Structure formats: C-alpha cells, structure tokens
Image 1 (tube, rainbow, N blue to C red):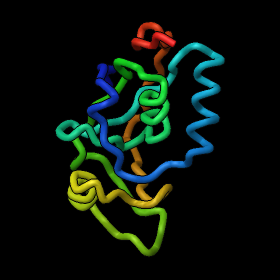
Image 2 (image 1 turned 120 degrees about the horizontal axis):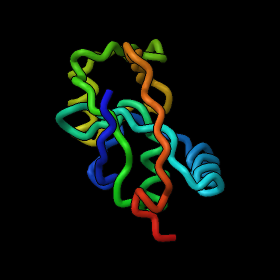
Image 3 (image 1 turned 180 degrees about the horizontal axis):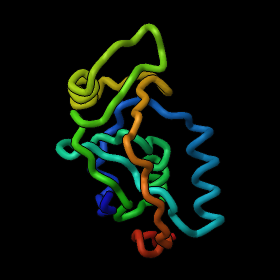
Image 4 (image 1 turned 120 degrees about the vertical axis):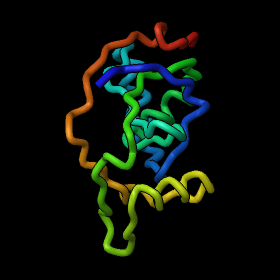
Length: 129
C-alpha cells in the first residue's frame, strides 16, 4: 500500500467520533511530535474509512496534509458493529456524501492488509504551532 498525502479539509467522515478520544490523541501526537499511522480513504470521495479521530486531530492542529492510503471501496470488506444498521459500501458512501453519517463505532472495515506504518514530524505535515 502506497502512502500519499491529502489536505485534511477535503476529508469526509463516515461516522461520528469521540471528542474525548480526539483530545487524548491530539495530546499524544503533540507530545510525541510525530504522526505514525495513515488514514484509510476511499479512492473517489475522500471518505475516511479508518481514522475519524486522526482526521479531527489534523483539523484541530491545522495540518496542511496528512498521510493517507487510498483504497477502492467496493473491494474493502465491511460490516456493521450494531444490529440496528445494515449497509454496504454504496450505502455508506451515499450517506456520507449527504453529510448523514453513522453513529460512533458503527462501520467496521476488515482491511485485507494491515495499514502501513509511517513516521512524519508535525512540521513535515505543515504544523506551525
């Protein structure tokens, strides 16, 4: 999997996130000074398949770019973590494009390969704080 970069302002959530988790992760990244995991995006719409919290951290820190791995969404296995919701990749995409995202911890992607690790300083990602 190739790591690319994307402007965080172009990214779109597919599900909600935990504000306390964002706060914790933001503090961790600021303390360590490095970004170690790319976000998983769909190829066509900048939907964040994995990394809702990292997306929010990037926006909060005003990063100019974040590391991403782009995936062909129809090829990514997914499932619901909640009995109340049943969907496929098209349903998730359509809802996200309408800004009608799922609740926190609803959509689970079972990536065929693990996401690659990375190591970028915050300055490399455009942080000027």
